[in-house]
Length: 293
Image 1 (cartoon, one colour):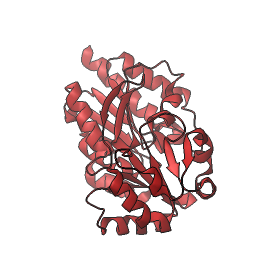
Image 2 (cartoon, rainbow, N blue to C red; image 1 turned 180 degrees about the horizontal axis):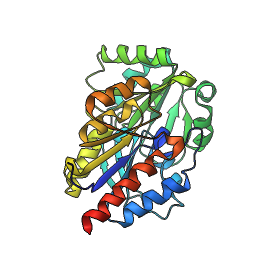
Image 3 (tube, helix red, strand yellow; image 1 turned 135 degrees about the vertical axis):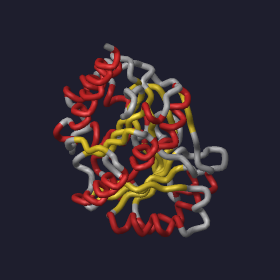
Image 4 (cartoon, rainbow, N blue to C red; image 1 turned 60 degrees about the vertical axis):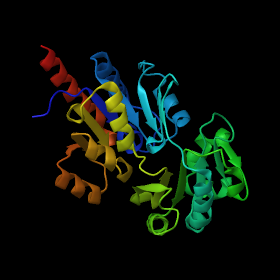
């Protein structure tokens, strides 16, 4: 029997957000707010950068000190913008990775700044072919630099990289990176959307992941892993689902990942399009109220 949840980390795409939507449903939004009001720390844990995450939460009347774990764990800030934690990849490693992974898909690097130049890539047109909605939503933050290595000067270390392409291409890219000389300076985590033949390979500093960031956040808050819940739907959520003693996988997760969930003992929530997060959080809230009573 687990103790009451004091900290819950929730993935964004495919978990808190409905499919093909950038709007959190009223039920999910209410569940976040109600749980916060009950004294539980609610955190977002996403591969998105902070500037692409915070606006989705802006109209939900959530606390300004709500933690946002972004860029797959590389940056943690509050919803109000206060810094909590940060890690960066050496620019020299990022330059080497560019040359290695360029043949496999669209390569993008993110820098810890606001506005144009926050993200750098070589071709908006190439990116638009693969991830059009993402490109349009982030157009004001892009800077086109050819070759990309010119944007990665020593001392201007990126917080995250990304390669996007087909599922098979990104699996090949992951294998190539792990076998390369750059593997010691750059870790990767894969997110897949098989129905769209789209995969994203996130490039992060070694050891950095959502799970790593969640563990550090819990320590700061004085919360034990047994009191921590994590909710996610994809491969880049695995580390935090494993670290949190109360892991929950969404019902819309890939079949292969649902098989992993059974072996690891993670619970399963309804799909994201059925407000699966709210279903889980409403149960957490009921248990919290009962424990207080």
